Amino acid sequence: MARTMLTTPVGDAYWAKCFEPEEDRFDEDKPRSWSISWCGEQSAKETLELMQQIEEEFARIHGDGAKPSKNAWPLRDQTDKDGKVTGLTEFRFKRNETTKKGNVLPPPAVYDSHKNLWPGGTLIGNGSKVKVAFSVWGWEDKFGKKGVSLSFDALQVLDLVPYQQRDPADAFGVENGYVAETPAEAFTGSVKEKEQPMTPSQRIQRRAAELQRETEDDGMTRAYRRNSNDEFEEVPF
Image 1: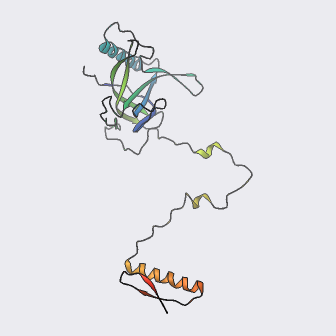
Image 2: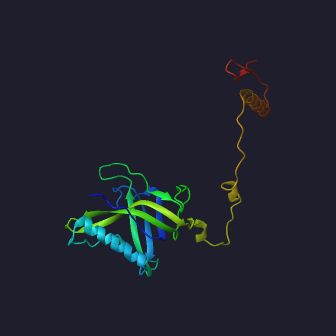
Image 3: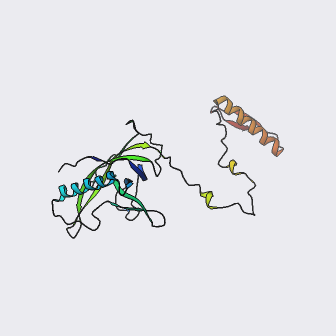
């Protein structure tokens, strides 16, 4: 049965994994996947219509009167870090890197508001305004009850909230105590000027100078000559 391509209304993006597939945190044997959560106001007309579209696809796939599983619906009330309901409904979209037969799938296509392909290096932060193109596929649990999942097929970003990576140093305050003598910039902040490659003659001249310094350092008198391989060898007295 051919799947119907559907599109969400404009909503908020959360936890967008659009460019690099990630492993399943609970089952390493499952294929890696791309995913995104789309959130809309719980009582908004557009959110209710999206729910109804998914329910219609459930009936189309499984038939009227099918018994839904406990986890039949890929949506839930969004909660904050304290477990309080935010008033948004969260829809979960996912796309596996490989099919059950082992065929490799491409990542979801990502576009800007003018349908230009999205620059891969620009990450999409929570709260970005987006639309998700998706299809619905059905499944059945071991008890014969039915459910549906939402395939993450494409994404359009209408208003970007840049992804802000958390600085680990923010977990600490300034304390009295040891201070490193070597500034951190010496390891991470400074960029040395790239050394220009030397010509063969410059390499020979530099090696000759190094040998001369070695002679001066050990206080011995030595003589060197260049052999057929453009290398310096010591001349025995």
